[in-house]
Image (cartoon, rainbow, N blue to C red; front, side, top):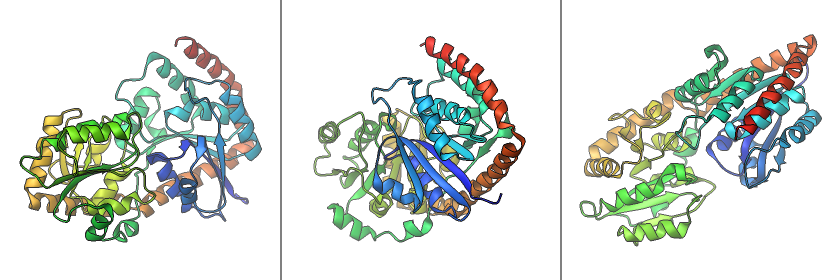
Length: 408
């Protein structure tokens, strides 16, 4: 291909989130002499996020109704925008963008369309309506990507996608960034955490799926045996107010031993403050925060959901518990806090696993191989005119989607 390969990413937003952080890191590592990059997303733009993608990225926010619901009018609007930028490859991420991105890409004549699944907000099976949409859209997706084997299996089941079109791209993190963080004493002094505290907590956007109230209740149960316990939460809550979380912490006896920091631009630099990292979600794909904590040699206590057991092996890198089980979560934390040797061993093995399987360079290499192959395929399709076949069938698929809308 003589010219640059044009790659367009469509993520659920341009504000925050694990998918957005991962894609920003990938784009930052892509050679601008080889690739021309566009990043689209719904809603407002947070400059600190998009700056992580590096220079020369065309950022295109897409307005939508904040009340939610299916908005068929977004499809032609997005298709018009894509027709202006003429990407060779469109990578659509997660369910909330799928209908709009896949349909619009085909209507705009994008030669190669990818759909990537990085997570979900519910453990429920897709409704009949959503299942119908997935089956109607699947023929218009050239390749599917997932961040873990679990989500790859979900794609195969719910989208009826053949295994040969599904690729698992492991998430990676920059070990130099983790290793360059301030010391434990410096971080704790900055956050006002007592030197003798035993710090338990999490880093995330605290959506309801993260079940942070479970963590607060579990830590409250530790006070009698571990009076030095301290709960640190780094990130903004969504769906519950900070005041409600602070009130819950006080009811659990954690007044003065609780810090809800809000979002910070370098959350990984708060990791040295932690003694145990917790993820008690109802669902996870591949958690960036868990990988970063493992890289920082912090033992993990997590719920055995989604792709988390692929990251954290029980009794090896940490302890796994069922979701929504506060007594079991408290018991696992109690065991970790009572056994410094277990904490050290789990932390060391976690670092070893990240070095072996979840480095930034390994992630970038996997994405580059995918995008180069798709770029070559796009060029072949442009020359052969094969993309016009997709346009002929998209009309029938949109009719099927219209039927799905009508089923509510």
